[in-house]
Image (cartoon, rainbow, N blue to C red; front, side, top):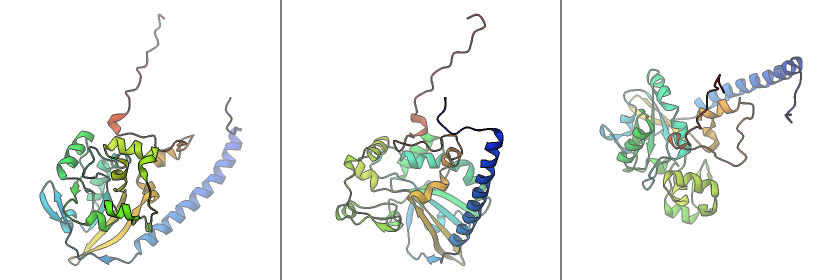
Length: 263
């Protein structure tokens, strides 16, 4: 018998109406936060960032693909990785349908990583994705927008991520990091020199402005899996930390035998 609270349909409805009031309050708060986000001052980008794309060398303006708004997902894929970060890959699994709709609303969505383009394209092919992906291996873009860090920064404890400086951390003994790094073919230290995040840009009157960046738990809203899990009976149910894998790395489901009328 379940240890969870049970009740009648009437009990459920009373509790559900209380929850509905809380959900509506959260929605209104979310709307207010979105307005605050869009009211942030824009910062002009004058640095000539260069990228490598499938169409050849490109500047930041080229990543807009003719649109006025650009959303960049900072995908953790370092130069020495053999595969993309499984967490970033889970997020990117939701990009293919979305980026088409965004493109038709004057917004380009692209991933940017520090790895060379050939690695990115090969991994994208493996995962069956089609969204644009650029390599920032030839510029400071990832470093300037707090998505990549150097070994020197790591040694000095000078990693500033999610708008704060981190203490110097030895990641080698962290089992969660080791597991995710192993899926990426990276060491824990090199894995953590790359970080997830997103940055938004706008192009207006010939100038480009940085408007917003978010990192760490700020990415929760774009994990398409989590809004569903938050509505599942057991929620996120992650007592042992990250449980996910690259989409093609889960074990094959056990075959289910169909019932036989003659059994």
